[in-house]
Amino acid sequence: MTISTGLQFAPIDELYLDPMNPRLGRSNIGREITQEKVLESMRTWTLEELALSYLENGGFWTHEALLVVEEEELDGSPRLVVVEGNRRLAALKYLHAAYEGRPVSKKWETMSESAEPLPTLFTRVPYILVDSRKDVQAFLGFRHVTGIKQWGADEKAGFIAKLIDEQGLTYEQVMRKIGSKTPTVRKHYIAYRLLLQIEDSVESFDPELADGRFAVLYMSVQTEGVRQYLQIDIMADLQTAKRPVPDDHLENLARFARWLFGTKDMHPLVTDTRQVSGFGKILESEEAVQYLKRTTNPNFEVAFRIAGGDESEIVRYIEEAADNIEMALSRAHLYKGSSELKNAVRRLGADALQLLKVFPEIRQDLVAEEV
Image (cartoon, rainbow, N blue to C red; front, side, top):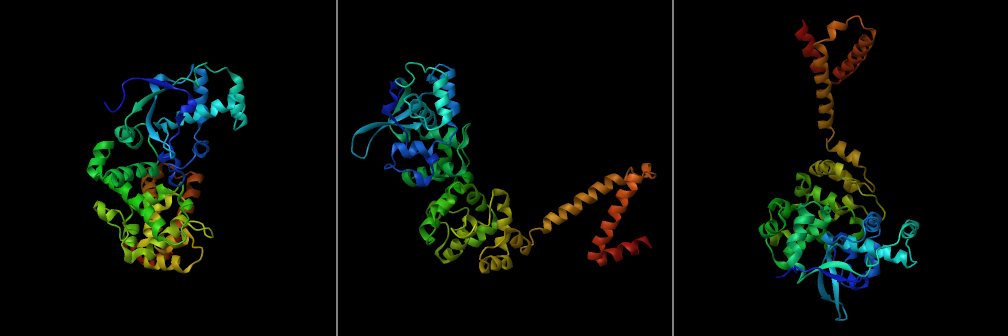
């Protein structure tokens, strides 16, 4: 049995947070990362709510026992590392520090003064021992990639890449392990490898610029414009996907990284996920790309207009107005004496005449039809 069926207990000081936890972010993980740094990285994970529940509900929930592997430290000594339940353990560690007179904030101090902890809260933390990380990966994949406690796009992609690059799994094998779909697995992997290629190929690229923005990169790879500009094959096999951008398009990759993530001297062109489809449209336009290339601090809206991206939006405005007018026409005659309706019609008529001046041939056709 690779996962123990027996519940075990350990004091808080014998349980280690996982320095390889993908939720920490790629720049914050590694076996050499100290426990202090891991804990500090988790400080913003709304741990106070968990800690408060420990105090209000009589301790750490046994049915939420930590999943733990025994691994060697860098000096060779064994330690119990939590591979599932790091947020729960971090909340417990911050609460423990507060009770020892080392609160990290006033909120933790107040919490520690509000109630006495269960005597065994910090000395008998429930855990289940797992033989290896590999034994629990199927559970982690389902729970956090496709399940009820989903990770962000970067965390999912990092987990998928680990299964492929370190364990040699195929897209299909990963799909079966985590309960996802093969196209989704492939897209996450290609986006993750694209980020690694940027870090490896783009001179002076600062990885911190990509922190918290992987979702923008992931969504951009799904647009036709980005795939064409970088020559990315979204159906690539694993070998090709390891370096998704061919060598003859590395200059484009450098520009793409600058526009998507910015630099220390320039804000990113794409500021949130709502602009991703527009970014793809921009990269489809040679004229818009030339504007981006020659401008020190290009503007998204300007590039979008150059690419003709606002055409569909204007069409939508006109079509929605036409739909509303058609609905109004069916009953407008019932309120011919309404001064409020007359004012609205006058405004509509003035706007319509202005619009027809932009399209004189349509106005001519409409006049001819009336005659």
